[in-house]
Image 1 (cartoon, one colour):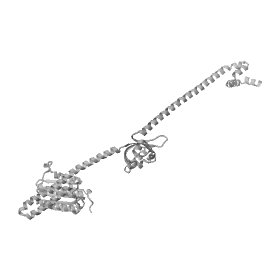
Image 2 (cartoon, one colour):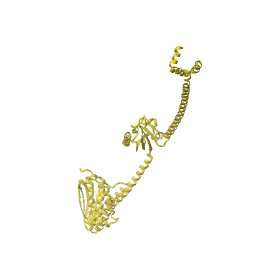
Image 3 (cartoon, one colour):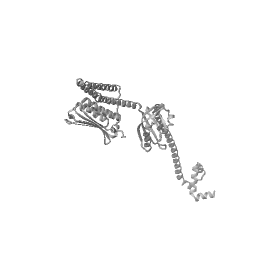
Image 4 (cartoon, one colour):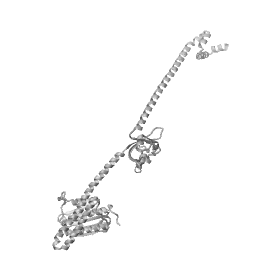
Length: 429
């Protein structure tokens, strides 16, 4: 006790620490009651009061902080739950949109491996989503469109955000489905990049479009056939009938003076009429007139020249290069024969030429046919809408991708030439 009191008297700080410890342990009242009132103890009461209230304030702060933390935690819990409910609602909403959309919605990775497909995709393609998720979209794309699909994947892999194109895919049971596809690159943090696809079934509209194209093609073909039929009737049958008429006229003149020659011309006219009847039948059943090639074409030209000369009394010369004739295909030979028929007939009927020449030759890799006469000639500026035969000649030359030149000088004759470029011909043997 003496030592304790000596420590208290010698070290005031020791007494202060003891009082603080007493307050902390809740024994301050006992210490105050048991202690003798001393002047030194009274000097520490203000400090003890301040310390007490400081501790009360700190305790209040601690209680308030705990209460505030509980309130914040409860508020955060409510907000988190609200966000979860909203996320669930949005997820349900978008899932319903995904499933019930009329358009095809799908997802795949950057290599084309599918991992989702909605009901519209199942309905159009005929595959269940379980089957589809084991497929690569590139395997469904038809061969003619795979290059376009691979190019779209390369662009998406290179970072292009979107790509749109049309393709056809093979559906179940061998069906072909035409799709308009829109691909969007999707990047989600922490997950591999993927591709979201939206596709529209355009098979029906494409079929309608193709049907319209086919109808247009048939209409154009019908119009072309009508024009061609008019050309063939004019250049072939009408010219043949005109030549037969000239032969009959000549036969009538020879009936009294040369019965035998008249009889020969009548027989030739009958044969020509039979040929015309055959050509008319061919037109009726939709067949082409007899096509010619090579030597047959040369012989047909020679026969044409002889027939024109026999019926009209015009002197015709004939010069055909066999190599040039061999370079013509059947269609080209037929067109040139009709052009020659029209040009020779015009030289007789309109030009009243006494001499005319037909030549077929190679020139600079091209094939050139030329019909030249020394008849009356004409001025094309005065023809107006007449000259249907000349228009036929030019139209046939255009069909051959050839060059047509018609040169005529009144009183000096007419030259009709048609040049077929070398790229349109067979290679020379």
